[in-house]
Length: 276
Image (cartoon, rainbow, N blue to C red):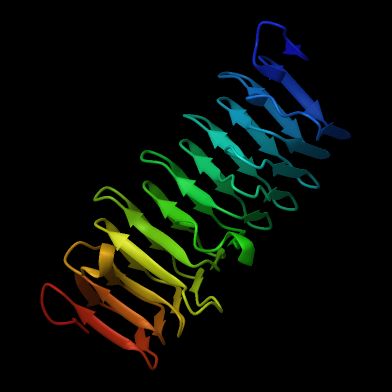
């Protein structure tokens, strides 16, 4: 069943059952602490438009189907929160997190299928969270939000799958924030960290980065250790595909087992020579 609203709840849309939306769900005037709550065990299927200004909590299953648009906006709190749950963005569907000071925060499994599109101003994959991208994922904050902290942080598992395009246009990124974090760019996928901003860099702390696709480090980008310390950083392994370094790649280890390493930038490893 769905409660709209429940006087005993902080939520103004509270779903405990199954909701199928093919029209317009406009919650743009809702600013409660938990404006949209899809409870554990609940199912929300969207093939229409969901406009949410406020906090969207998903503890169940949210399926953004073909033709579906999910737009989340909030000035202060998390735009989308997926705790031990699933959010699937299907082919032909779009998710936009345009939230000012808010972020897309994922603690469950977020899957962006081939043909799906996600745009976020600010993204965080929590420890234990998984992001599987086979569509288009763009983390692209506007200039007004630059310089206020990390624009993308991965504390879990990020897999850019075959056919996936991950565009990393931001000033700060934690590609692997912690020893258990990993970033995988599969064969046939593009991970593009060649943003136009002179302050754009990727900072890593532990974990692993593996590439078998197309991995690009632009002239304005540094893929370096946390705080500039390469020994406190990820291990980079390439088994195929290509890595183009026009900026700087300086991690704990750099092991090119296959594919091509090229570019006009600098490549170094803290724990020994770069292996090519």
